[in-house]
Length: 112
Image (cartoon, rainbow, N blue to C red; front, side, top):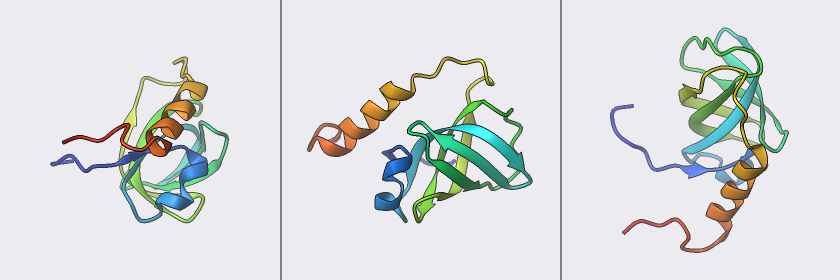
C-alpha cells in the first residue's frame, strides 16, 4: 500500500455492518486455493477472502486481512499481513474485546 487507508478493526460478526468500508480483521487460515482464502475469524465466523495474488500462509496461521467486506462472509483483500506461521499464540478473546471496545465506545479511538 502506498498510503495508509483509515480502516476499522473488526471481527467476523461485524463484517456486514462494515460492508463497503475498509476494515482490518485477524483470521486463521483454513485453506488457500489460488486467489481464494478460506478462514475463521476470532469469533469463529467462516469467511471467504478474495486475494489479489498468491498467499503462502500455512493452514492454521494467523493473518491480518485489510480489505473491503461484501455481505456477512466475504472480503475483497487489499493486503494480507502474515505473522510467522501456525505456532503463534494469538489472543482471540483479547482481539474480540478490542474490536468491540473500539467500535462501541464513542470517541474511544479518534484522532485530531
